[in-house]
Image (cartoon, rainbow, N blue to C red; front, side, top):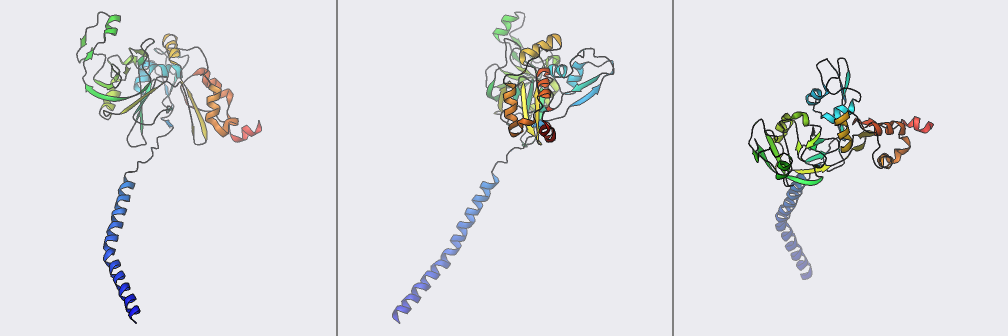
Length: 329
């Protein structure tokens, strides 16, 4: 009897302890749940930037049109609009000519973060914080001997109405330049400047917008005045900047393989001088295209792809045959 009472007493004590501890347990569970909720809310959603932005368009000229003016109007650079329209006079194409506007772009193979500059297609790609939108604008880049560097850096400061402190190396090339150029219409930096972690390198506006889409600078990157003014407020100090040189860009999208090839920097100089370039395929062209195609390599339309490689018109084209066509071969 005494043993039974002792068991009942112990059971009662245990039950009472459990009831007493229950609120603490609930509080602990609530804290754990809250921490999990906070952690879940801070998980970064993976960006869903598209592989190709924009679309190829056309324009029928009137007599007053020039490719140079059309390029600026449609957010294009000189080299890309001339390369896309071989045989047309850049300055006087004539009336009733069909001009291809290469406004579609495969994103470069680079981190989809911050700003990516591709020297080959002479464009800047600004990855917006929404994880979906990419803003792309044409560039003027460094000419031969003053090449724009490749690699990774960051935005370190920004300046509206900048003063240009002319580098000694530039003054040596042109002794008539002053040591300092104050803000104004004669300032090559234009009205906005974004300085990089690389000393003496920046991207900026320009007082010579016809230089956009050409290799004409001393290594810095120039934008149309309206483009740098539009982007300036959204570019933050600390923004990652990646500079690459990729004449050949390729991507898979919606079951199709897309290929876009631009002139190399040296070929861009030829386009500047003659309106055309010496045909040549990119290095390791077949290997790169086959690797990108993967299991669909047997469907590559090699005739179409090689023609695009030689022409380098900078327009994304689909290079996979239909499965039925590939099987018939």
